[in-house]
Amino acid sequence: MLEEELLEAWLRLTCVIDNQRLAAAHTMPERLPFNEALVCGLLARAREEGVCLTAGELCRRTHILKSQMNVILRSLERKGFISRRPSQTDRRQVELRLLPEGAARYQESHRQSVALAARLAGRMGEEKIRTLLPLLRQAADIFDSIQQEV
Image (cartoon, rainbow, N blue to C red; front, top):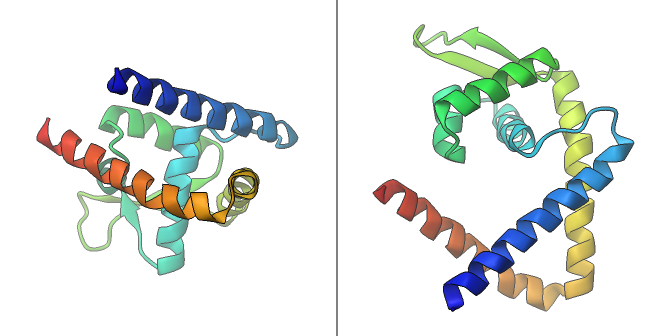
């Protein structure tokens, strides 16, 4: 059945990627779990753009539940990656910032992930990667729309 094949390939790919991240992380003093790396990536982009994000905005962008996001943010704050402060425009909101030390540590983790992607691209070839990218983006967009229907 096509759906079973799709699910099997998807799960295999995500497991292989996460295992490769774990293997590469042995050189880092502290491994950055996937969801923490995802949040740091969004905060790093926001930092570069000169904007702040809230926990609610991170939940919307990642589709992570609020309770799980709070666990992630507490962990990142405890590790010294982020800081929280009340919004200057809306005191009900808390702005999140990636601290310079957190940004540097995230960049090292991100560099390892990019190196892994480069190895994949090198073995698959540019033409196949260029074919794969729109399909992956389309699949993500469809999953987003499915989740909004629920």
